[in-house]
Structures are given as C-alpha cells and as structure tokens.
Image 1 (cartoon, rainbow over the protein chains, first blue to last red):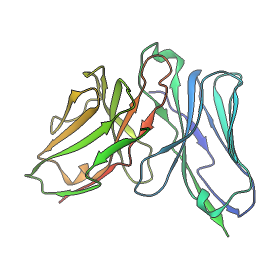
Image 2: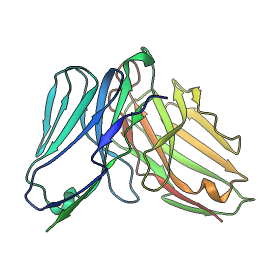
Image 3: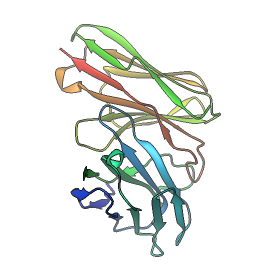
Image 4: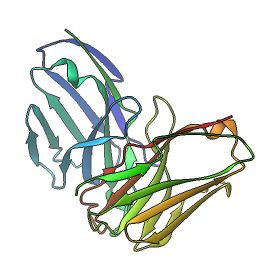
Length: 115
Length: 114
C-alpha cells in the first residue's frame, strides 16, 4: 500500500536549536497532519494542512503542505525539553476518493533534546 | 469537549479471558476508528465506523470484535487473545467526509496479554 517516507528517523539536538523534519510520498495527498506522541499516550494533533502550498503555524511549530502535494515539512523553533517525543506525519492520499477515512502514517521521527 | 476518552488506560488479561475496550467522544464526529500500535511503530488501522456502520475491517482476526452502540460510543470486544496482541490500542474520531476534519486520537489502552 501507500507509504510515507519520514526523515530523519531520529535526532538529538541542543535545547534552543531549531528542528526540521519532513515526509515525502510518491503520490499526491489531499491532507497532511502532524502528530506528537509521548510514551504511553495517544498521538496529539499539532497541525493540519488541507491545501497545497498552505503554511500554518502553531506557536513555535510551523508546517507546510508542499506545492507538488507529495511532501510536507514540520519545523520547531527554539526547542525546549518538553519537545521530546515521537513526531508522526500522516496524510490522506488523493487516490483514496471522497469519503475515505483512512490515513497513511510515516514511521515517525524520534526527537531528543539535550538541556 | 474536544476529547476522545478511552477506558481502561491499562488492561492485563489472560488468553482465555473476555474483556472490552471503550471509547467515547462528544464532538459530533461521525467516523470512529480503532488502531493498534506496537512500540516504536506508527498506528495501524483496524476498523472504521462511519455513521455507526462498519465500513472498513482491515483483515483483523475475529478475536477482535468492534461494536458501535451509538454515534458517541465505540467498543472493542476481546476474546481468546494471543500474547502478540499486546499493544497500545488507540481510538480516534473525525468529522468524516472528504478531508477528515478533526482527526483526534484518544490516549489509548495499554493491553498486555499473558
């Protein structure tokens, strides 16, 4: 089935540094979602993107829906220790048709922040 | 209310037990989902209910039986599970339709089968 390539797989950064991660697909997507998951908890939606080229911010987080509709990135500025966790991208492929409820997930980026 | 509430948070069950996981949302979402998540892996879709009807079953073994009593509730009945079924089980809901507005996850049930 459809797969999302999420990179990097993991990253270690110093507190205060900026972070960037991205997801790419071989086919076009209609929706991109970015989630953060803490251990033992469910994924929490950070940013949702619905239009090609859309750039959306949520505090220190910024995400963009690529204009080719095949990629998305998430940036975190001035990282803090509570940013630690696993970040997942997820999307709804365009081929899935109207009314489809399925999401395709990336494999996640594990972020570690060194104080 | 913008939450999906799952109970219990933790569950340990034997292979001969019957148990149920519960999920509740009051956001008016018409699509509800069960996902299974293994450690360090992304969530894997199990079932989708749309307007209280089962619309997707991702070839899940019959020892997992979903139920949607009404538009706010979703249950997952468990029977004769195997140790490899131990995982985090996540419920999610969304507005449904074309763009899945408000695709929200619960905090999950950590299931251990012994």
